[in-house]
Image 1 (cartoon, rainbow, N blue to C red):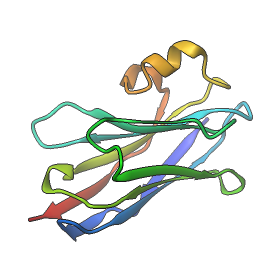
Image 2 (cartoon, rainbow, N blue to C red; image 1 turned 45 degrees about the horizontal axis):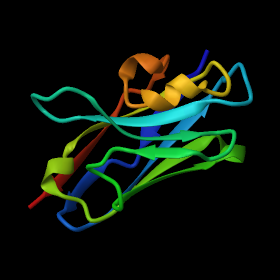
Image 3 (tube, rainbow, N blue to C red; image 1 turned 180 degrees about the vertical axis):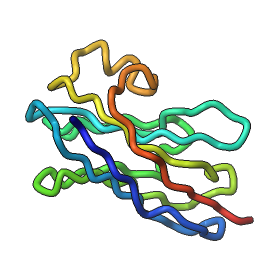
Image 4 (tube, helix red, strand yellow; image 1 turned 90 degrees about the vertical axis):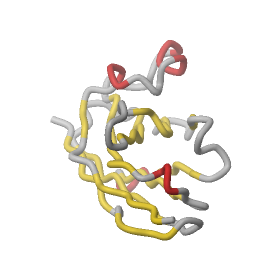
Length: 131
């Protein structure tokens, strides 16, 4: 069973930075994908970024490109989301999710931001950006 634990959330002023961590374990295969999602109050959960463990392929939502960076430390089974130039609209609960069925197929790349593509989820960590 895949287990996921997020950490690193908090309160930061606009323009500041935070780094979220996603510690994941229990993968049945060597290769997997990790996605970061977020859900702001009153809004649907949206995909923010994704990374493939096999080759480091990354995907980003347009709203965070150039500001957020997803990376992984495979030996530690940890994925990071470095968030810079934070804006009040980045305020949300951030979730880490895993696709644990091996290396993702091509079709996954077309919908990496769909919740339904992921089979394991963490509990979330709150990020609040003050103006």
